Each structure stands twice: as structure tokens, then as C-alpha cells.
Image (spheres, rainbow, N blue to C red):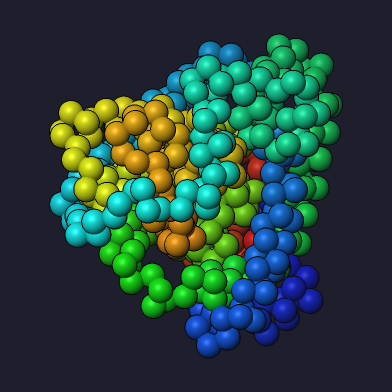
Length: 454
């Protein structure tokens, strides 16, 4: 069958000795936890392993986003189709984000994790959050809109600003779509360029267990387990609401759209575990794009929806924002009426979009929200620093699952998803030598295919 991948002998042998990637990462996470518990001082020194892995992945993000968006839009050709897909995506993102924010607000009001802490904001040392609040001061609606426009094309790629890269990529793809036939050689060249970067991603993914081990060892070694007792309830509540959101909300969306969420989670198991170990959704963006194409989503849809989802469809972050704001209010005995909480929700709907591409986006967004409201003391952010890594892992995992679901849903709405091929992949459990693999462009079977991520 065209597009079928035949692994070489060396790769087959390596898999049989080390096992699949998801198992390697899972073992690495367990070992990282043990190292952090029993050798905390040495474990903290392992932080560069996790940071190095994330940086290796991040170095490919700009060209992967650029190539995916440009090739996807240029091959669509029809500007009406591009606009339709974009509009559907943004509406979907906003509805799901609103639901996740509401879930977070409702949960924290029912569970009251901050009640009884009786923290006096005046006694908190705000120096630890100075960098976050300084960044948050620049997050306004006008500033956000202006920040989308890069000072130069090169600056967007050098700084790695996702919003700016998406803007330039969309404009470039739309320009090429105006003379589709003449631009075909250039689009094919960009496509080949993109394949090369996916090859780099595949090499880097071999280091995922090492990165997960270092990231988890540092987190446990630095913050410990016993020291987190006062905030353990909040952390557990964030994880519980995140799990409920995935299986109830995203599960319902998946059922309505006609695919199995459980099968999708199994298909994404490597990416979920890597995200859990590194607390970074960026670490798996490129692999997710590739896997969604191989699952049966048309490249043009993946190229538009997935990068945009990383900016506008952060359901996990939205849950954390709603819960974090009310938690600080409870911990500092700040009374909020129902009207006040509705205002919190509306402000979060705006500020949650303004921090895209900012380091520590969730924390920065929360700082911007508290600063905009002037009701909840921003100094209370100090309380969440100790559990930032643990809650960050939860929201990162939810974000990647949510973006995977969103991409498939939009693809199905556009009749750009191959259900039969997806069912074959789901039933096989992963892409392997026995599973047929579609080309990255479903309408062009002559295009070569990248090997599976194992």
C-alpha cells in the first residue's frame, strides 16, 4: 500500500530492547520521583536535563508552525474555506474555554481549598513574583493586539513569539494561495523543509525519557512532598477538575463528533507522559501535528487549528486561572459576590488570550487578572508559587488533549477526516509496521511519509 512504512532492522531491535517510548517515559517519571524523594539535593541538579530537552523541542517550533500553516493554507486555495475554518475554530475555542473557566470557578466555590488559611497579604514577600507582575503590567488589550504584529519577520522567529509567527504564516499562505499553480514548487519546497524539521523532532524525541526524568526529579527535589501539605488540597482540586473536564466535557464532545476519547488518549500516550514529566505542552507540539496528520486529519486543517489552539484553546490553563483567583480570595479572606466572580470570569476571558507566547503564561495571566480587578490582592500569588510546577503539569496535559480533540472536531466538520483510517490506527494502538499510514496530504498519495514516532 502506498505510504506504508517498513522499519529497518536496527530500529526494530532497539524497540524490543527498550520498549515503546511511552513506557520509557513512564519509567523515567517514576525514577525521577524516587530520585527527588530520596536524593533531593542531587535531584535539583538534574534540572538541566528537563530544560535541555524542552529547549531542543522549542528550537523547532517556529519553523514547524510556519511550515504547517503556510502549506496548509496554500493548499486550501479557497479563501472562503480558510475563513470558514478559522471562524469555526475561534468559536469552538471560545465556547470550550468559557466552559473550562466556569468549571474552575464552580469547583473552587464548592471545595473551598483556601478557606481557613487566613493569610494577611501584607505579610507576604512579593519579590518572588516581581517578574510575573512586571510582565503582566504590559498585558492590555491594545498591547496584546500590537504585540501580534512583529517589528520584523526575523524578530518573530528569533523571539519565538507564536502569535507573531502565526500572523506572518497566515498572510504568507494566503498570498501564495492567490497563485496556487505557480506557487506549487515553493509550497513543495516548504513542505520538504517541514519534513526535515519533523525528522529533527523524531531524533530529539529519543531523549524524552531523559528530559522527563530530569524534570520530575527537579520538581520533587526542589519542592518536596511534605512541604506542600498546606496547598495540597488546591493542587488535588486542580487535578480533579482537570480530569473531570477531560472525561466529561471533552468526552462528550468526542462522542458527539463520532470518535473515542479513550482511544485518542491511548494514541497520544507518549505525548501525555512527556508533557506530564516536563510540564511543557510546547515539548510535544510538533509530534502532535505529525500524529494528527497520520491519524487522518487533512494537513490544511491541522496546520491551521493546532497552532491556533496553543494560543486560544488552553482549557487546562483556564481551569487553573478560575480556581487560582478564587483560591487567593479565600486564602486572604477577600469576599467576592456573585457579581464579582462574574467580572473575574469576563476579565479572564480577555487576559487568558493576552499571555500567549509568554513564559509562565498561566501565572502571568493570573497576575494580569488580579491587577486589572484591584479586588483580590496580587500578593496572594506568592501562595501558588510552591505548587506552580504541579498545577502546570495538569494544565499542560489538558491543553494538549483539548487541542487534539479540537483539531479532529474541526476536521470532521470540514469533511477532512478519514474515519476508516483513524479506526485502523486506533485499533492498532499506535503507528507501526503493520498499520497503513496515509500521506501527510490526504489528497496527494504520491507524497512521501515520515516514519512513525515510536
